[in-house]
Image 1 (cartoon, rainbow, N blue to C red):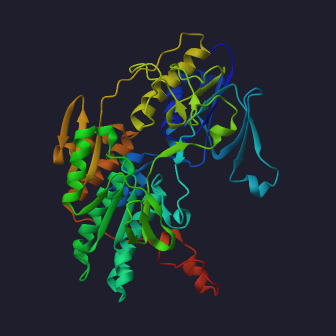
Image 2: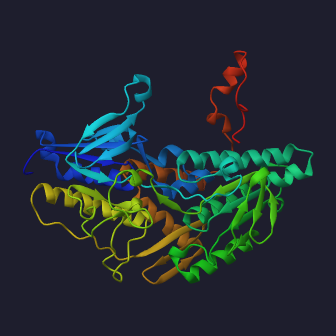
Image 3: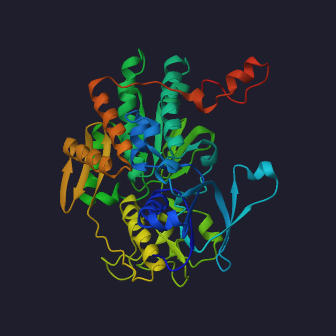
Length: 454
């Protein structure tokens, strides 16, 4: 039993936030029923996005609703607040947050008191001051962005099929991806595969008409899978006529022209930015100790260094890697986030019960990546796989990791059906502007094209 009543505030509903709250919910079941413990999860979205499935959602292999996990269903014994923490006063154990009702009420941010704080806001896209990026760039961190990108790619094929302007057609069929990590390579591989299949339905758009360009500032892609598989990935992509530019940067995409550091210029209507992440801006507002890269300084027990009753893990936390050389930190990836969440939840329970804390220690076991349907790379405990076996391992691994049996069954069913029937290739860009058609019918001026996604 816990020594005294505790109010636990979890900031963030991603990997760490959801799994930590789930762990606490299981470990403190009797205390929650008796009112000795309260768990509040503050998250901008009422769901957790399983990001490794975003490329397949963009390619249409998985329905968008199966990529997300509804937090209120999974965290039935927790209080889920859809909102954002805007400020923290940890000395007073107080958090200021805005909710969907804050603006309507006009009373300013709400205040929430807590006893134990879990900071797991995750990360946001790391952007650079590239001219035109804010106007024309497309991100790839959320399910909305993934589905929007799918609609956008198919829309560009529609434009290319119907236009009489060669320059417009060329720009519509040129797709530039910036960033050679997991997100960039997997998104490019899946979408190129989808577009190649979709071209069968167009009488005047062929796979060779499309230009797919991957821009990476370093000298390798997919550093997580090792140098050998990184080279294999580059070779495999180039065999599919994908233009891979290593040691190259995007200098500008103003006026819908991608200008690269090697002097190349590509008129394009699609620039997908996947060039890394940075800690959530909230971390800078907490006043808690941070590293020179902006991540929270943590101990191997997942406490914030030198700050009692404050815990952190995931992308926003610099957690010491006790399995590596001194001074090393765990990588900000899903593999560590899932395992850190379990230890973090257990340690909060240990702290409440006056027990000894556990040390987070997890050796890196390998990585898997998809390069499109039936194509992939995998590195597991020193062994490497490519092609279909790696792709199968990629699916098997992530199916085992996606939360809840409900999601596992639905994803497996969709994969099975997609193997039996043809792909559904359709753009639903109008879903992004649902009121545009009615505004036009009512005599107003719709702010966007009701059928377009771009």
